Image 1: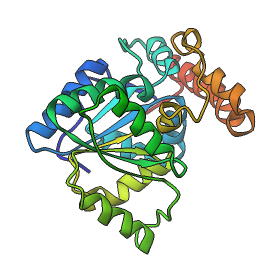
Image 2: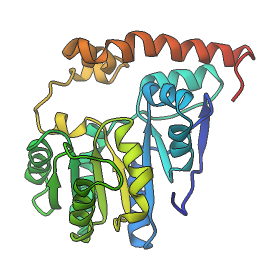
Image 3: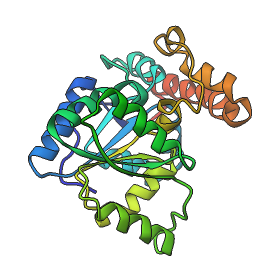
Length: 257
C-alpha cells in the first residue's frame, strides 16, 4: 500500500499497534510531507481488532499501514495483560486540532471527506476558527457510491486529485474508510491518508461526546453507547467481552496469531 512501514509497534491479537506518542505521530506526518513520501495512518481500537479477526483484508490493511496508533483504552489494557506497554492513547477528535496547528504553520493543505452533508464543512470551520491560517482546501460528504469503478467514486477521486492536497482526512467510518483506501490509494495524489471515523461529527458539534472525565478514563465507549444504543450495543456489549476473551486466551497460551 505504501513504501513507508510500521516501526515501534506491539502486537495485540496479531494487529500491530504503534507505541509512538501523538506528538511523534504528528512529526511523522510532517516528515512524510517534507520528504515527498506517502503514508497511510490507521487507528486501532477494540472494534478494529475484532474486525481484523473476522476479515483478512482488514487485518492486511492495518498490517500494511505506515503507522498505527492506540485509539482506545481497551487496547492499552489488552496490551498490558499481554506484557506490552503502550504509553499513550489518543483519539482523532483530541489530536486533530494539534495536527491542524502544525498544518497552519507549515502551509500543508487538507481535504475533509466523509460524514453526512455539511458535517465535514462544519468540522473544517471549527478548526479554521482556531487556526485562521489553516488550509482546508475543500470538503465533501461521505454519502456517495464508494464502489471502485462507479461514476460517483471516480468523480470524488477526480475532485481530490484536482486540489493538490497534502493530507486527506477521511471520515467514512470503520471499516468502509479502510476498504475505500485499500482500493483507491494508488489513484490518489495526496501525501497522507488519515482515517478518523466519526471525528467530523464531534468536531462539528453535531454529535454529543461524553465529558472529559469519561473519555479520559476509559469510558468513551459508554458515552457512545448511551448516546446511540441501537447503533452501538453490538459493538460494545458483545465486542468488548469478545476482545477480552481472546486476550486472556492468548495470555494463557490458547490463542495463536
